[in-house]
Amino acid sequence: MTIVKKYKIGTRGSPLALAQADETRTRLLKAHPDILTPKNLEIVAIKTTGDRIQDRALSEVGGKGLFVKEIEEALLTGAIDFAVHSMKDMETQLPPGLIIDCILPREDARDVFISDDGISLTDLPVGAMIGTSSLRRQAQILNRRPDLKVCIFRGSVDTRLRKLREGEADATLLAYAGLKRLGKEKVVTDLLTPDEMLPAVAQGAIGIERRSDDQDVKALLWPINDAVSFSRVQCERAMLAILDGSCRTPIAGYAEVNAVGDLELRASLLSPDGVIRLDARGTAPLAQAQELGERIGQELKNRAGDDMLPFPV
Picture 1 (cartoon, rainbow, N blue to C red):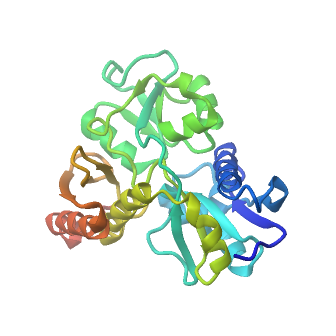
Picture 2 (spheres, rainbow, N blue to C red):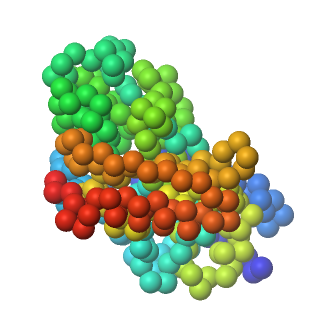
C-alpha cells in the first residue's frame, strides 16, 4: 500500500460530526501505527445545505441527502480523500463512483427521551409539546400518545437542548449514540427500548465513504471496518431501499445479533400522524443480511400497497 503524505477526511462541521471524524482518525492511527501520524490525517469541515436550513423539516426541503451533497461533491472532485458520515443521514443510493464499505463498531442505537423537568413520556400531560424534526419519531410518538403535539426541532444537539431549556417544547428525543459521543449522557430522562421507539435505519453507525476506484484508501480503511456492524447496517439499508425510504416516509428498522448468532431484523412503516403502523420482523444468518433486509422490506411494501408509499406528509 502506498501512503500519501496526507489524507483529507471530509465531514460536516457540527460538534457531533467532528467527534465522529476524530474517532475515525483515532482508529486509523491505532490500525496503522507504523505509517500514520496525526499530521497524515487532516479533518476538513464542510458546510452542507442541511446545516444551513434550520427552520423547516427535512421532508419539506429535499430529504436527508442535503446533509451530504457538498461532501460527496468534494469527494468526487478529489478535494477530500474519504468522508465520515452518520449512516442514518445517507441515502440508500450513492452517487456513481462512490462506495461505503467501511462501518465502524456501532454505538448504542436507541433513542432517548429528554424533558427539562424530568417527566417521563408516559407521564407527560395531555397536549404536551414534543420537539423533533424526525417523521419517524413523530409517527411513533403519536402512535403511542395521540394526545400529544409535535413541533419542529432542528439544529445541533446543543441547539436542541437549548430550545428545550427555553421552553419551545416540553420534551424532545435524540439518538443516544450522539449524546454518548459528545459526553452528554446526563441529560437523558429515559432511555427508550426498541419496543418503545424503534430506531432509525443505521442509527448509531459511522460509515466511511470513498471513491470506488481508490484502492489505496480501500486498503487504509479495511482494518477499521467492523464486520458485524457492517452486516447490521447492510440489512437495515436493504429494507429501506425496497421501500424507497426518505424523510417523507416514517420508516424504522433495527437489526441485531440474537443469542444463537443470527441476524434479527425488526421494521416498521407508519403514517406521519401515527394512525397507521405496519410491523414486520425476520431472522437469517449474518451472511444473508442483504437478503433478509430485502425480504422484510418487500413484506412491508406488499402490505402497504403502492398507493400508500410514500405516505402523504
